Amino acid sequence: MLLSTKGTHSVALRGDGSIVESGLGPVPVPESYSNVVEICAGWSDSLALQADGNLVAWGENLNGETNVPASATDIVAIAAGDYHFVALRADGVVIAWGDTNFSQTPVPAINQSIGLIQAGSVHSLAVLGQPFQRTAAAGDSVTFSAGQFASRLASFQWQFNGVNINGATNSSLTVGNACWTNSGFYRAVIRNALGSITSPQMSLSVPRPPLCFDPSSLSYLATNGAFGMRLTGSSGVYPVVISTSTNLADWTPVFTNSPTTNDIEFMDAPPSGSPNGFYRAAEQP
Image (cartoon, rainbow, N blue to C red):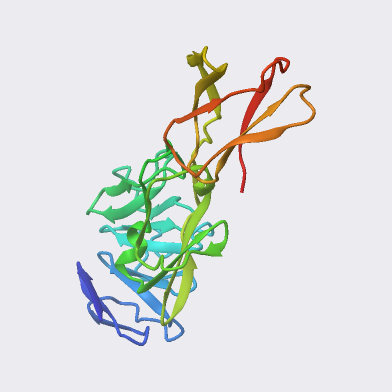
């Protein structure tokens, strides 16, 4: 059971999604309000979040508190001041309405996702969460969080590019030792017994480092004409194959290294009297 109280009344949420109200509120809870997952009480008005992300409100409506804006859909969290309400949409947009005498409802421009919302008597508060777009270097650790979703919903399933990630069932997801194959879109599907909702989509970009020969590492052995060089930029995902050619059309593999993020040292000894050769490197599945 959840309980919220303020001003002249109290509101309680039963486990079956129904609402109970007590106190001096002049407007009773409409019987049609069901499948509720979160409630909050203003001074003389109440707001409830249903499992489908829609809002219902009732009470005295002294400042338009019960006039839920049309844009307040797909809601994941709610909060109540004395005479105003605040709601957080799944796409990270904050909506506020009701009394505006103390500028508690005009929402400033925010270009970052919101992790939490709350309301005081005559003010509103939003905690900035993670950016919708994140960039990481290869090898970094990146954590995504469901934010305020975790306060009221029970189970989580994280997805990568719309596909479930095996075992990713916590309120947060950590991508460790990130590489370019982790670049894409992440989101969480959150469920309880009354319904489900999907978190904002968050993107991760891990630039793929280019494979590059380091000319400063060139070494030469006069005894057999062999030379060595260092290769940098391996992503650690696929084996690295170095090939040689005399005409830039026909390539012959001369060196294969297992996946690694470390620099690769290789050496080759061209046949005696062979023409000048060319080398290239590629990561191959």
